[in-house]
Length: 336
Image 1 (cartoon, rainbow, N blue to C red):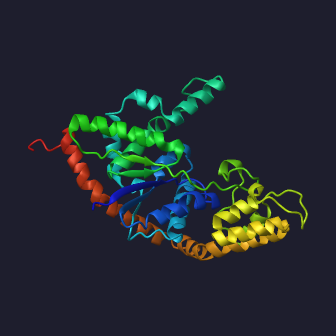
Image 2: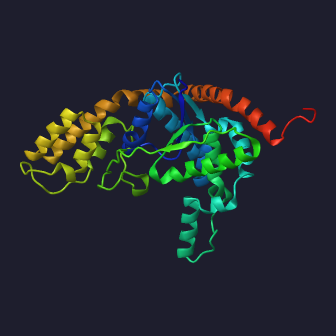
Image 3: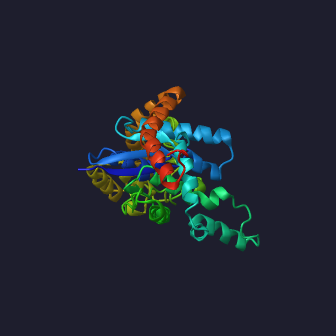
């Protein structure tokens, strides 16, 4: 049976935090172990240029995020793990697809519409501050997907439109030049864990309430101690369903540990004790990956080697496919 090809893009901005780990990284690595799946994971560094013009920050973040996924167990022998900018066929395909993409389709892209709305509310010209990167990035995203003929693309609910646009663009290309592209399907996990942050809101860099994933032990403990709690005293029964401490606990605990902590809450466990146990639980899961992460960060040449090897594996698909696409659109030798 033919393996399903699954493609996952990894944002290369910011420092990964516990919410990223629980909601995205851990389930994605688990999914990569499925025997009937051929997995492609790419660092979306070209996309990152849309939001960041800080070259040092972009390079540092790419290194940190690559090290994070490797330290957490992504098997580069099993999956194709590459940096987007190392596969030049993607940018060539982007231009081919741009020539097949209606401007009206890009006008409907969520990110562009949000920028226009913000400008209108601020009394600015609709396109103030809008770059062509922001405007046309759905075409680059379509190229990411179609370059490897991905069958399935795991996305958040707010990203379904990107896959739908890739389908639209692929259908138009196929109509004009023959059946070259598989029409991808967006896969939305309705049970993605959303972790609360230090202040009880969703853990997010934009809220400044995150717990970075690979903090040293003492700093991890300090961050966990900062989790907001109510003023209930030791001995007073506490509601676990209204507690950030319990919610983070539940994301790392076994079912048995979750039930045990529920009983502890009902018995009035002190907040300090609950946070101490939470630190021990989280730290136990992250201790070995943290050591691997620190070792990788101390050896950037090893990270680079693995990314370049991944790019060569990716290009084993993209190079011949691009030759096929070039011929189909008429970019061929004059004597062919």
